[in-house]
Length: 425
Figure (cartoon, rainbow, N blue to C red):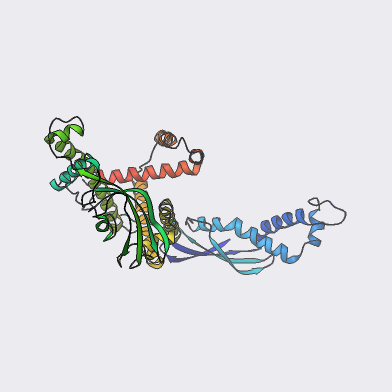
């Protein structure tokens, strides 16, 4: 077997393979053996026809086709090994020349694991942000606590801003109810700006029991394209008006929120919780920045097959999330004013970044001999089994050796990331 290597890109290669008569003999024998078991010859049971007899009845084209097939399948991976290349998927083969019994020449093209040269990963020059808590964030949480502790009392009067109302409504466009425009016993705080302009103001002044229509036009930049700028009518039944008495932000409110004696104690607890949350955000951003810096300082090529896999994964995630909201993938794009072409462009960029980051971290793990013990992997599997104990399908997947290997690889990448953090603090 002779091979000739051609580099198509940093992550894609083409190998031309030439097989002579000696290389073809084993393939021809296997092809003849296979076809002999399939052919029918009078006087012999199927599968029991002697090779020499079967050879006289097997069409030459069939034998040639099977011979080439066996020859390619038995040599293509060996050809890549000979050139010291590792294909990420089964190579794409194109037979260029075939002389029965004498010669086969074919090209094999595949994405490969590219050569990766890491930059100075112990000096990436990334600075970690400070963990800070803004006073306005504490005030926002106190205000939310005040709202949730508010007292509500049903009143027999016209609704006004700051009241909570309970309504049934049906939104119609061109006389037909549109998707997502109807609800029953819906609680709405007037003045919260939860609905399109005019909706909440239109309820103000009406009393419990009133039935009325609101003629409204959706904003031109509304999320759902089908409703953007549309003229609609909302049929409304006002069932109840609740007067809302907002809880005063003081020591008494603090006592109702937990084991606090004073408002200052509650504020301090809120501050600590925000610090913990912000510290997590800062740490995650630091990790992301480190990986981006590592990729930027390194020579990393992203194989097309891995980019394609990531794009599919991104689309699958969006499709699942959209489905939980009753939307298809296409409807999701429509709601977000996104074209398929632009989405694919953005998804490709994200996918390429993910692939490069993963390959850089895997290379770092190899260089630093970072690994994860089977005990840790098994402990992670036990943890996942507990999480998915009510999902038979998920538990079945966890028994798949490939899933276990994937979990181990993810843990190794996390360990490599921890190494980056430790050496760049």
